[in-house]
Image (cartoon, rainbow, N blue to C red):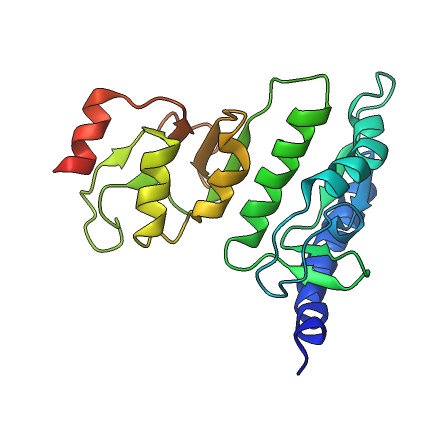
Amino acid sequence: MEPYYRDYVLSFGEVLSTYILNQYLLSCNLDSVFIPTNKIIITNDEFNNAYPLYELTNFRIKNLLIPLLENPKKDVIMCLTGFIGRNKMGYITTLGRGGSDYTATILAHSLYSIGTDKNIKVVLWKDVDGLFAINPKYVPESSLIKNLDYDEAKHIANFGAKILHPKCLEAIEKYKIPLEIRNFDKPLNDNFTEISDHTDKEQKKLLLN
């Protein structure tokens, strides 16, 4: 199968699940809009592991998302797909492993660079409380790492932390946009990982032990 056909087929699950979520929100009388991200994220031609072209992506976000976000008369829930974009020719591309998380950080990068509101953070919802010194599935008493800087987080991600891909951090590090990893079963829990431009010294010891 040609790479562009493969990415086209792979995009269907993300598009359908996001569309269903949007329809559910509308059925609850919530003001929601469905936006496939292949309409706004323009990438290179590397199918299955595409990289965003920020100048083109920023232009589309400025025209499609910013008006919704900055409309004072309307509070809209935006249901955006993750994982997919498109190249300059219009072929659907996928962003590879961690693609949905990567989508969130790409959007944060672009919104920060062109929007007026710089109070932006990314929250990734997972089935664990955050990043741990050791995988808690194997060592239940492993310690949660509450604070990390970008370099340390990329180091952990490069060494196999499955809940975080290093390219997610590359998109937000330039503007020092904070990222939180939280447990979707414990949305109000104070125990989570925050990745920003600083690290708590006590937390750093967990990485060295």
